[in-house]
Length: 169
Image (cartoon, rainbow, N blue to C red; front, top):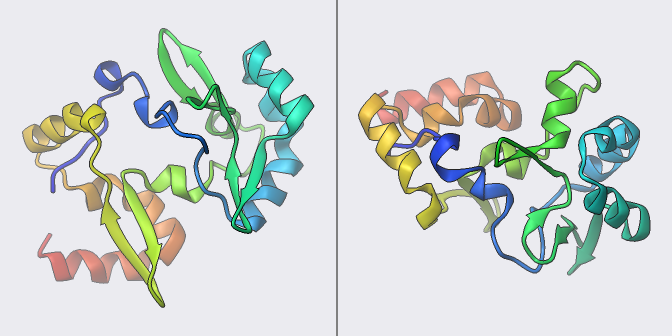
């Protein structure tokens, strides 16, 4: 499957999908975000700051932490630049204010992980991502190549190299 984000066309739709819950978190990520929250909130719109102040940045469903969403839409950490939804956690990281890039589930998107006695990776097809599929085809970039950094972050560079060898890329 070809894929390469085209933010100018999708406007950061992955951060604003309609859903009761936001992206899944790992418990250690909750702790990491707590540690950098004061740096991250500087980037947020007032409505999002207020939500975090009043309700926190995550909620728990079935003993799993999930990011909060605003009005069942935007992630609580979304800020907007020229009409494009962007991650404030990542912005703080890129500005050198933190050492945590973003939750792994966000970093991996459009790859989703299901646990069936071990990780099963799958491509999450969303209509809003059609421009990314088209750009990936145009530039001959696969979803695995697009997600190299996040896959290496999660499984290690050796795993990623072996995976790419298996795919013939």
